[in-house]
Length: 276
Picture 1 (tube, helix red, strand yellow):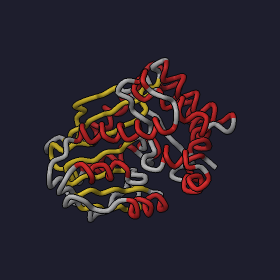
Picture 2 (cartoon, one colour):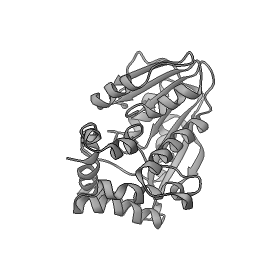
Picture 3 (cartoon, one colour):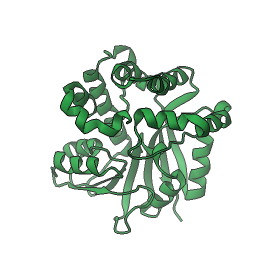
Picture 4 (cartoon, helix red, strand yellow):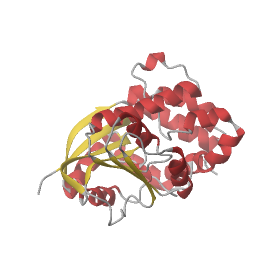
């Protein structure tokens, strides 16, 4: 079983793991990577900083309606709930256990309204209201289809609204090779190590692929933030906890190695819906 498939049970056994992943299930962000301590407490604080970076880019205003796709425990919505007022905050996640935990952990504050839904981000509820902003924070690689997700959000996003994606991007010189190897073995290794609960396969793509998807689904890419160096300390912090087998070592150290060579980058992409 992959590491993230069994987190609730792991929390009961090891308080450090709960400290690291009890609020957020994504990489950490260090403004000054050289200051990273390398332990799980420091990593947890850095994970919150990544969520704060997404909120900063989202530039939320009172009466905005927001969708967090792949919301996990609802950590990023929880931060928005504490920091902003009069928002409609909607989280959707395919893992029922995580959705239930989010409902328990987060209660509405400051005139905000919170709603956590179990569901597929590529098949959003028809009842979803018009959105001002949506994001997918380090989860879109596990979605059935990026293009379907972009289309689904576009149908509900107001003109000029933002779609923010935080993802691993494959450098263009190795995209075709990566896709070939990913299909044959890498996807299986990654899901076996990190978890199969949400998906049995993952897909990493390059910037040109994102630009093509955006063009096909009615967006323009307005900003790109390469934060690879800022998330790099994540690997040192989580490796002792996650690596339990050769597959785990390949999945964790492989991503770290390719990131160090800038063959895989970790980026925040901001898309804007084009007015029809």
